[in-house]
Length: 371
Image (cartoon, rainbow, N blue to C red; front, side, top):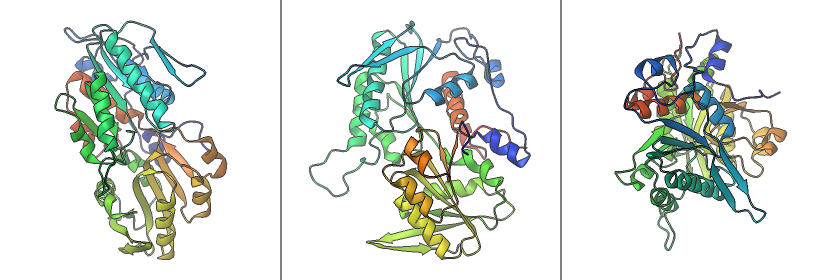
């Protein structure tokens, strides 16, 4: 049966016998000092503004984990909906003069979650928050970030950025943006931090005792993402190599050798699962020993679960940027979920204390210490 909660890097390390050094805290307070940051707690610092963490309805489980890791109680917010679907927001405590972080992932239903996020920002701004940063693990409309030679179409990813700026968002924190140019849709007054979730799963895959590991990109557009993932596996006994599935029209060609390899197919999101399952079946046809999949954003629309269950993929690892749909859990047992809570918590800590976010992109991107 599936685990009752998403797996963390610590869980994967324990399976292997490694030890980790999590930064958990229990003291709920306002701001972070240097000593508190090292201990994983939040405590008062002279001259620093109080920090408030607010969660929307789409990310409550992830928000609880981030709150625990920061040692900061969630600031309560009431999110109700009228019978016609309108969302009603009320912050339950004062945020005047505070640095507010609003956590809301914009997975399905995308439009409902996006409007809820914008109204949470508006409520904080109208309540005199000093600054409002939005933590959007899954950025909406990211796949519509260019026109693709089509006429009379919006660039929806840019339009969402304009909405956020118009509501007064001061900073954006996201995970694995589908298109890097989304960062440029925001003006210089609204910095965007793009975190990478794939390296958080490296500990899990090392526990699998991979033989001749091969990292496969299911399409040419994801080669850079697959190479980044491959770098995280460099301390494996077998040096990993890269392969690519190239699609021209309806013809798919595998470029690279996967014969006798343990294959990991890396992508940023899974929607209908057709791209991933096609790549998995092709790798198996070319002699792959085992086929795994890793994806940051788990949409799993329509019959994705049935396709995965019938495919050659042995296991798919996804992050918890989006809640897994119940229909998927009922149709397949091949999907496991890892948590990016530690990654996001460390990013919030770095932003609020004024330390470097780029330190999260070292060999151990997730922040865990594997010995």
